[in-house]
Image (cartoon, rainbow, N blue to C red; front, top):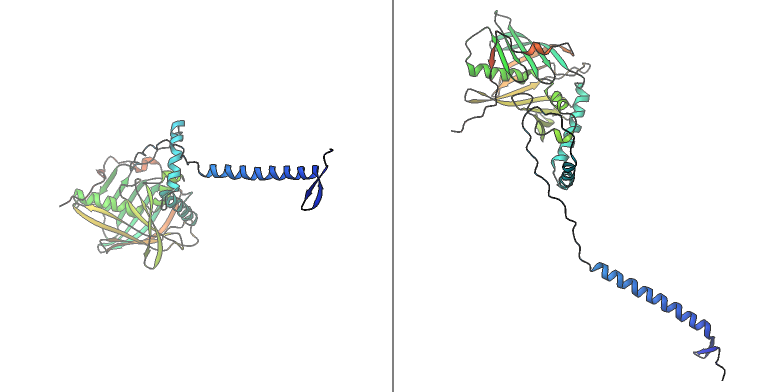
Length: 335
């Protein structure tokens, strides 16, 4: 009996070849779907294994001294630095983020004050205090060379204090100051003479964020006399730390403070800066008030500012007839 070429399905005849082709296609599709589902189930149940990373070597603390140029990193140190950077970026209030903010602030400060191209300053002024009036001349050279000469107008005495970057020295016409007082007033002279301290500190370090601390550090913002101020502390270039208050509207320094020992007493020093002249270049305050422990000590008016005059390093060296002043850092003894 000859085989039929047709298949009856629900009373209808269909060619056998067509029916077999359709069944084969359906079987392949269903098998493929089942295989894919099985693969996905196996993948989702596989355990997650973290790739091992090399431990990060601890970072050595930076000394409070003038920085040296960093040497080129070797291959092993580059391998260690990579996980350390990743770790810092994962922190919510990391130093890297705050330093980025500090760099932006300092760049704006340099732009407004025009101190980026100033390598030296000669500043003339007049001062008044409870003991009379005087004339003063400040000479400063980048990054931390200073002299301050003061001449009394009502008498014939004068005094000159200097700093060669490491050693302080004095030449005084009066001898009623003891050793502790001379050291104290040397630090005061540096505190009020260092008008470009913030700019010169920043530029001595370069703009590499990792090199700023501990010589420059941004602290939480503060309100000072109704002004919203960014606060930066500078350390290292001078033998005193200075807290600088930068008005975040004008981007000029409006206030600074520090603490200095006078014998065994800790004295709070403050400077309230007068506004600058808008057309001046560089834009520096045209005067200031100096306070000791909250009491006004001197009022200074700056009459002339001469930038980028030729000042040789020898002009800041200790003269043969001067007294050397020890400016090593001192701390208050606990009772």
